[in-house]
Image 1 (cartoon, rainbow, N blue to C red):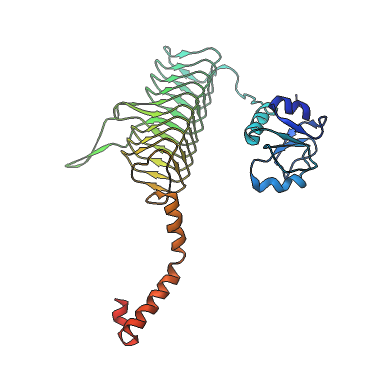
Image 2 (cartoon, rainbow, N blue to C red; image 1 turned 120 degrees about the vertical axis):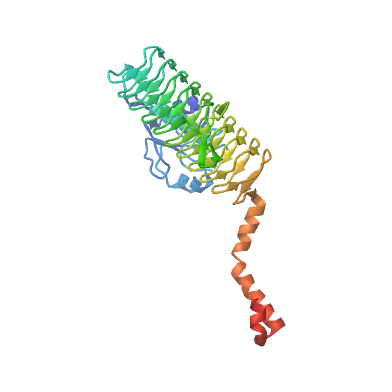
Length: 348
């Protein structure tokens, strides 16, 4: 059954301030440049303010103090977050698996399956593992022995959760993630390399989401830890004994080397490389494609490879565009000093 609300009802739901018509029926949500007369949209970026005059949306969520327009507006503290709330309201998730264990799934006799758990086709639940109430294990997933999965978790297809890993509540593992694979530990020996036993585990705390094909290695000894509320994008590598704090976000194709500690509320762009055995403080921001090779103090913003304070990196990057002109000037100065007859000396 589709949902519809009047603009007055939407404003009450969001505890917002309605400016304009209170009886417009909202039956959908859309981008501001594509919205129709019964759609609600939002403006959270100044680049989209211009659409307030041209949009056909029935109403638009805006921050307080938005410019005047003939459109119906609903002022809220955070238009983007409140738009997400409406997305969830208008588009509730529809499970496509039936609750229960599929006949083709293999569940060890001593595994503990909580109330309302779903285990999809061709999945495997290992010995002594525990799956918390309301969790969903999608088809073709492997949960090894002695794994703890909390309540209301989502473990999507082709995920591998290795032995002894512990997941908190409401953890989401997207397709193809590998949690608890062996860390990259090899000791040089006379005939090559000797594998270092990886005897630790991975601990993922509550409300963490791990992206598709991301790998988190078990600790050599002890724990690799992902703190509560942290979100990791697709194709990220987290090495053995790494600790990532709470509510940190890391974008795709980033690699974090072993035994590094990353603080809470950090923000990492994509394709970042982080060396091992360093500490990165809380509230740090790292720009995309940076190479972090040293400790970073809390609150710093860094960029570049090797990483530098962001303001310094910007000056360096700006100067690079002037190098051809600077080179010409230097050659002209050399010619004026050495003369054309001593050009070879200038070139040296």
